[in-house]
Amino acid sequence: MTAPAVVLIGPPGAGKTTVGRLVAEQLDVPFTDTDELIEAEQQTSISDIFVEQGEAHFRALETDAVARAVTGGGVVAVGGGAPMTPATAQLLEPLPVAFLSVAISDAAGRIGFSGARPLLAVNPRATWTRMMGDRRPTYERLATWVVETGGRTADEVAADVVAKLSQS
Image (tube, rainbow, N blue to C red):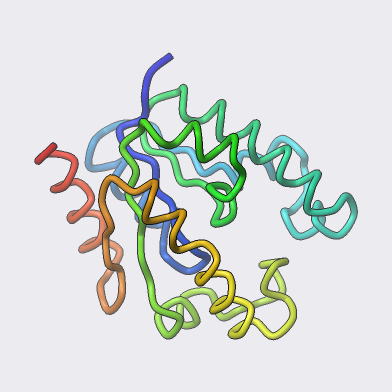
């Protein structure tokens, strides 16, 4: 088992996947996005899993994917809701975790609140705002570092994450 260089957490639109790829490239380590891992293994989209099998089934798949991903080293980006599962939160507690914080205005511009995000399908702005109110305390509790992403490019955020890792 190899501990990850960093685990990226945050809400939809924070840039976890984009920044994660850039950080992994800069560190010359592998990158794993747990949502992409689930979709590849299940051969269907996260949205379809939610619709056809329900959120509870997805969360079980996600918990397993995160547990496997954090033992592989490299940079790991987890789905926005993953840290809310107690077993996943417990896995993340001792690890280097960067919370990519983002305001709704920046998140909306990045993800467009499309139907591809199942938890944001109905009234996306109100849902995102409520979700962040619920999740922010957990994100902050688990975070080794909080990295603000608003008004910044993915390259700038990635450089900030790498700088924080090199300082620790």
